[in-house]
Every structure is written in structure tokens, then in C-alpha cells.
Image (cartoon, rainbow, N blue to C red; front, side, top):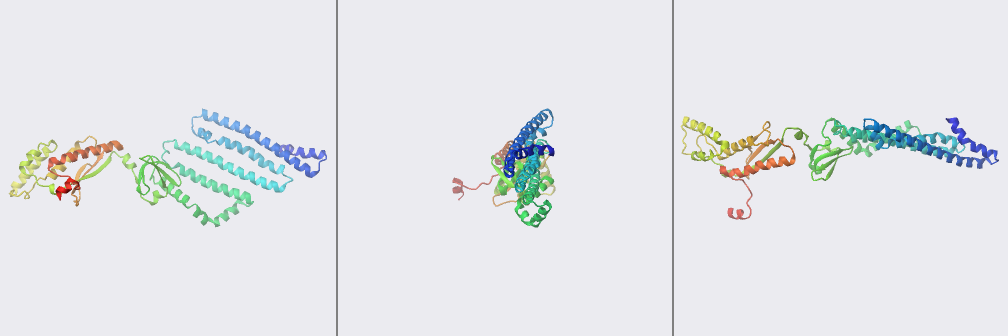
Length: 420
């Protein structure tokens, strides 16, 4: 191959010397002709190899079952490789063409070497992109931060490429250059601080399975409330439920607090935890004669009958003076209401009965007694969940009057005037 190349680029100078051209003129004319011949040969090689490689890869991609080769075609890997082959030929031919022009040979040789390094980086980059897209199409990797790992490889590749380019331009050994860079590593760390932090965060997020693509997360600090659509080395993109996009620094997922709703989505129910405030002065004992009216409420009829018999037996056994309601055991309208709501929730079709289900009152407040419903809806979809919760509390608010209880609300308008 070397002998063939020398014959191609050596005939012109010999011919000009036979025609009695002086040495300088013959050298320059020969150089011009050789550059033209080299350009034509390189272009022909590029066209041929591009046609062969692109066509061959397209045929293989069409016939094979795997999608990886299709992704190589879409990322133009064959096109970059077809550039590389004639470029290597040019690099090998430069010392022959510029044999009599040493200074030019050095400059031109280094420029071609730099271009070869850049082209190799682009080829590897296209392969990595195809590999990334291939993994994203697999269900077991679809929720993994593949972009982060590809970006890490690309950063390392570019660092290696830039180091090689600088070594070629300055004509120093790569080992010497690496040692020099080691001396200024503190500056490099300072420059790539965010990238390094992002890489560390991406690894921790992946290893600890803290977040996946498709997870619903909430992060109040950044106003994020929606689904994760992309995990990169430096950022995590969240598509909020109002269709806006929030970008969160990846490192913030490690340093700050956020809420991941994946556990709820994978569970058998979505929690309902909401309360209403009952006026404290509307809570009272229920008189014996009132119990007959409460027995008309079907859900608690059997409960009242059982409790009524137990209370009567206890009070008679202990000879309780019932001239005052506070003496002995008694039923309260608040207690009956809580029992009614518990039975109502147990019969409500939209709740998961295998999970926690209760009606309780919390610590009294200045506004009243919080009566809280704690349950889990079997349907976790946002619209249906909100409908189930609203339907339950519609019933709570409408049924409270049947127990002679009142819901607290701040006085306003005519109510404020009347209370004043």
C-alpha cells in the first residue's frame, strides 16, 4: 500500500524534472497536483464507502429482528465511519506528499490528526446514543436514568479526546499532559463541580431506586408536582399536572426533601385523610326518649339497641341516679355520629375495606373538635379519587344535622351581625 501511494504521488515530480523544470518550481507544481489527486481519491473513497456502509447497514437493519441496528442507522453511524476511512488515508499520505515541506507536514499532519480524533468521538457518541435509545425501549430499563450514564461516558470521552488533541497540537506525550492536568486538578474539579455532583446524585438515585421515569413526585421548593419525564446528569425534568415543566437539579434530590408517590400507586389504595370541625357546644348527652328517633337511622339501629341494653344494665347494677344525665354511662350525639360514619364507610363501595378505615376525633382546637375520616379509596386515579372523597364529605356535611351537631365556620355577613 505504501509503495502504491509513493508511485501515485511521485510521478509528477519526476516528469517535471525530465521536462527541465527547476527544482523549486517542480516541487510546488508537484505539490499542487498531488493535493488535487489526494482530494479526488479521498472523495471517491468517501463516496464508495458511504454508499457501501450505509446501504449494507440499512439492509442488515431491515432484515434483523433487533432494533439496535435501526438505531445505528438513524444516528448516522455509517456516515461518520465513511468519513473516517478516507481521512486515515489522507493522514498516511501527508508525509509522502509533503516530504519536501517539513514545516507544512507538521502543521497539516496535526490538523488531520485532530480531525480524526474528533471524528472518532462522534462515531462513539452515535453508538452510545443508539445504545441509549435501545435500552429505553426495553421495559426493564425504561424507568432508569440511562441519559445520566451516557452523559458520564461522553464527558469522560471528551476529556480523553481533548487531552489527546492538546497533546497532538503541542507535540507532547499524553502521559506528560495527564501529569500536568493532575497538577491543576483542583481547578478542574471547581469547573466541573456541578457535573460531578450531578453524577454522584445520579448514581445514588439509581442505586437506591429513589426515583424513576414515570414517577409522580412533589417537591415544593421547586414548585414541582407531576410526572418525571427525563433524568439527566445535571437535571431532572418534571411535567406538572398543569402541563408546565419544572427542571430540578439532580443533586437536589439527594440534598433536599421530596415526595415520591410511587408507593401509593403500587399499593391497593389511596389515602383519604380529611376532617371537619364540629362546634364543641353542640356536643351533648342523648336523652333516653331521643334514642327512639335515632333508631330510625338504619345503619346504627342495632348498635343503639345493644348499647342501650348494656348501659341500662350497668346503671341499674350500680344504682345510678339518672336525674342528672352526667351520672353513669351515657350515649352522646357525637359518639353516635362517629359510629354512624364508621358504618357508612364500611358500606361505601369505593373504599378498600382491607386497609385502615376509621372515623376519629383529634385534639380540640379553638375552632372546634376535628372529626377526621381516615380511609383508602380503591380507585387511585385522580379524578375518581377526588369524586369518592367529595361524595363522602357531601354525606358527612348533610347528615350532621340529624345528630343535632353543628359544623364550625367563621361568621360572615348577616351571621356576623346576628352573633354580635
